[in-house]
Amino acid sequence: MNKVLLVTGGSRGIGASTALLAAAQGWTVAVNYTANSLAADEVVRQIRSTGGHAIAVQADVADEAQVLRMYEHIDAKLGRLQGLVNNAGVVDVSARLDEMDVARWKRMFDINVIGSLICAREAVRRMSTRYGGDGGSIVNVSSAAARLGSPGQYVDYASAKGAIDAFTLGLAKEVAGEGVRVNAVRPGLIDTDIHASGGLPNRVKDLQHLVPMQRGGTADEVAQSIVWLLSDAASYTTMSLIDVSGGR
Image (tube, rainbow, N blue to C red; front, side, top):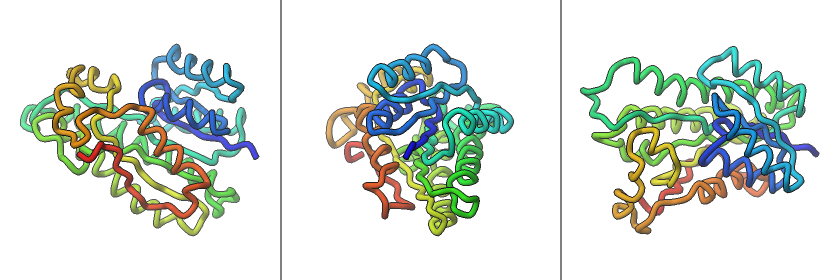
């Protein structure tokens, strides 16, 4: 059976590692990107070079119309979806709450929360037995920040990821009887370029002493947990929040 997976924010970091690992385990992957088509095309090229199947699909997940077009394209090109990884997300520059403006908060929640809700809604409409689907798995990428709060840096990001945790728990219960499993991973200090986008390119090195394992994690280590949750090996696992944080 052809297993179709959508990975949002799949052109870099955790998303790219997840797309590559999932493809190696037999998934046909739709690699979503917002603007960097070259990076998404490179992930697709790597998947195809080892005999896998993948396409790149553009959409800003915060834009409902773009998400709907993306899903229609996946439906037409790949068939019915069985997996979704809600990975697309952003941080902003390090700041205290009293230094932030509403425009920053709206961007943060539009992409990190609303985007995940839209993508999950469309996935449920395709996976759920209520809509004639065969079931499936949704994995939301949260963050250890949801537990830690990220004071003095990203309390808005931490708040958005806290919302993702609550969303994961509620949706899991909502669709558990319809063949759809919903879980989340909460990465800790992971060595990806998201830190540079927030103005802290050395964040992993600077903070790794706070991690009990005394190092940052890799995108591949997070991808292992995500792909396991997608798989039949996790068939009785839903409503779980899995920390991949080195003990922090």
